[in-house]
Length: 194
Image (tube, rainbow, N blue to C red; front, side):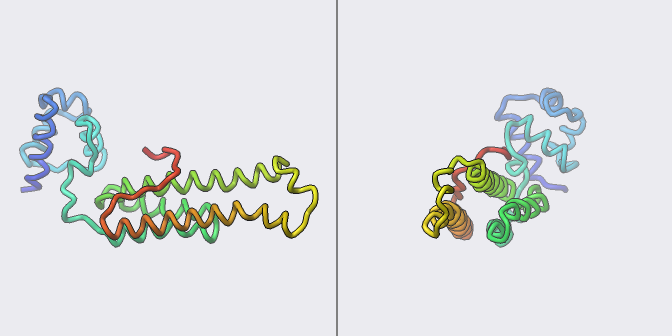
């Protein structure tokens, strides 16, 4: 017996959509025999087959697979905290969570969803951060740059300090929310990873 709950879940999702095995096979690009074997608990869909099945059933791979055994709140917490690497260099706030996400996105519950949220937020933050400096050097803030003084330098760096502080707070608050099994909110975020 492979995983009777998975086979039952696929069958229930298919029936709920009012789709025949033949139509599910056609929509997913899998063979009819593969669909039958999954629903008869003779095989377990993995990788590409699981993704195709999820798309055809208009759901996520997380919903099809039984994640109860494969939940790791510690990993989610570490992945969330890994975004603090932006403190050393802004791009690290993207790269390190990206590695965590790639390693476990199909293996642990909520890693895919939270990882995408973190990455979307960090990419958005990095774009805003570097856009500020680009605008500064292009002379958009030329009035600030005409008379260099300590107060002008302070005014230039206040937005940078605020951006860093905001990113830090968002990461810490969401890490706490993850540890308490609450929904995370990484805002603002361009939806780059959907």
